Image (tube, rainbow, N blue to C red; front, side, top):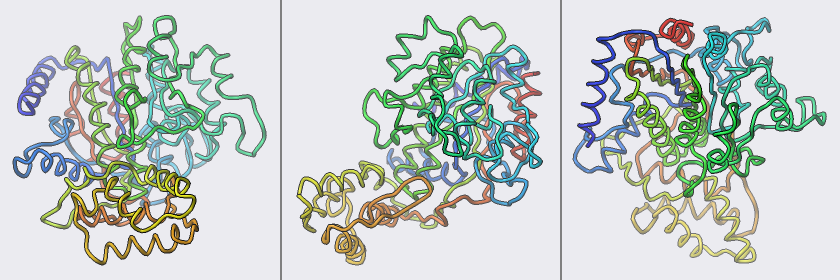
Length: 464
């Protein structure tokens, strides 16, 4: 089946090149934190899961005809953050880490999305994290600090963009200096946006509304579950992509620009959660497949571009006998493992035995069942139990975006060891990120480029 999909892609690519023209429809996918080694790791995982030999399967977007790399340094550091890199991608201008949509001197910058809107195109911005987080915010916000969530959210009102989607808005009722303020959702509705709470609510409202903000049903949590943890019917990036296309194509003769971010690829990498990271990239790939179905209907007018704002984690693929299929035995992210450990403590009235923990880890991680572990690894897990659950004491393992129980964090580490995957850092790296293209103007991306080149090339290809 993969072979036929690849041939289908190549057939459509040849057709688009023979009739090269303006990109009327532009999809920009950003895998936050998705370095090239994470893509390679996921391709190895898919091949191992298929079981037909090395290189027998891969992510769908890996079959696209242009696959190059991109540099990501910021104005003041070799290792960027998402605010500076998002700004570089969106505006073609380097800025300092932490600054969003503004130059180092504080002057406002114009994003590729704003230029598209000025040209009469419809515009969408979507993510799997907060809509006023760094990467999505870089396409419409202008603030000296990425942490000014309320102010970034208010900048949305000046954008006049047609569609926003994501986990919700951080600090929706409080300014960055701690003052209570009018709820952002109230301001959005007053400005004419329709708030859709979940995909079914969107389906019910989309016909009668032209400007939409799509968030989960429990949007006040400002969180979407990792793909590894998602249940049927939950809002996901593929569903958000479908919704974006629905809104942007409604009564539209001039085309659109849409940025769609796989934000939780980065969160999983910050936590060095290999299994969650791989599943998040597969979910990202599934969203790209939605865009590809659109491309097949408009091959002479569509560009699909895929990149990342930076690499997170500096993942190492060092062992020639990696066992990435073991990731499939991990049923939850370390975040959900933590929640389940807390539930177990409550159910046992704070008296959790080591045997209880072994049974739990067997069910959720496959340890001692599908996956053998060494004496040293078992001791490493048991030591975490003795320090915490045995004494009914809480010790947290912290990364940039989550706090987890010590046992959950160590279980994740043992899983990485058994899969033979290493991480260099819980932060960002200066590693190259991918630049992958399919469609009108794809040849513009065939060489090493900088993140500031991305929006320049999009504007050239789309002619706005």
